[in-house]
Amino acid sequence: MNKAQLVEAIADKLGGRQQAADAVDAVLDAIVRATVSGDRVSVTGFGSFEKVERPARYARNPQTGERVRVKKTSVPRFRAGQGFKDLVSGSKKLPKAGEVSVKKAPKGSLSGGVTAKATTKKAAAKKTTAKKAATKAAAAKKATAAKTTAKKSTAAQATTAKKATAKKTTAKKATAKKTAPAKKAPAKSAARKTATKRAAKR
Image (tube, rainbow, N blue to C red; front, side, top):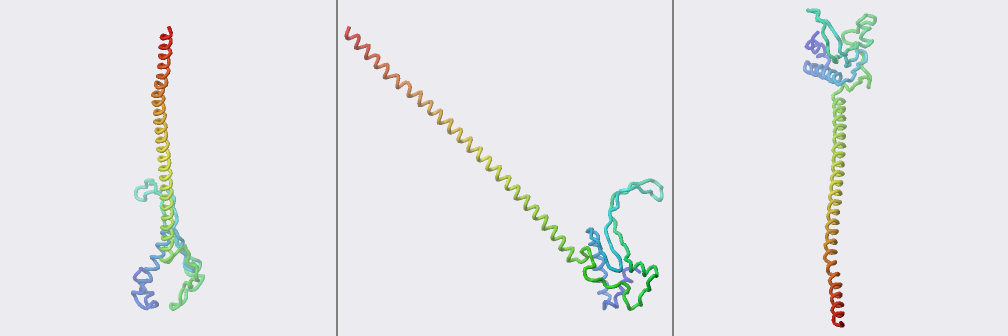
């Protein structure tokens, strides 16, 4: 039975070929997407689909017999449910054509985000987490930049203050030099007056 025959088999139950084709496509797409994302899809009474990691190994080329290294890969795996196994082995009788061979799954028995809505929610959650992480990183960079700017401005202020202090010190030294000769001048004039008085007395 291929896909077209499968659609034909369920068309009468769903009310038309187009509806049956859409249903089959939706179910298969949901199973494939969930399995690819690493979720396990379990259908009670039928089986489960899951993604399995296959480690790197050596194999032989059947045509040449040459030993070949096979890379690590992921493969899908289907495990039949007990009800499916019992029907195939013959331990249980297959229901009549009008009845469903696989029992309806109770609510919550489909695990692994089989529906498209669940898959969308998970993707949205991942995007939100990524956005939050990016926002935190940007905030940290801004804080670091602000600290660096503050340090630079503080260093610049300190340098400016040192230069101003050096200028004041230089100005004081220059003033002291100018003042010193002025003080000596009166002392010389006093000495001259004294000498003049002594000469006059003689």
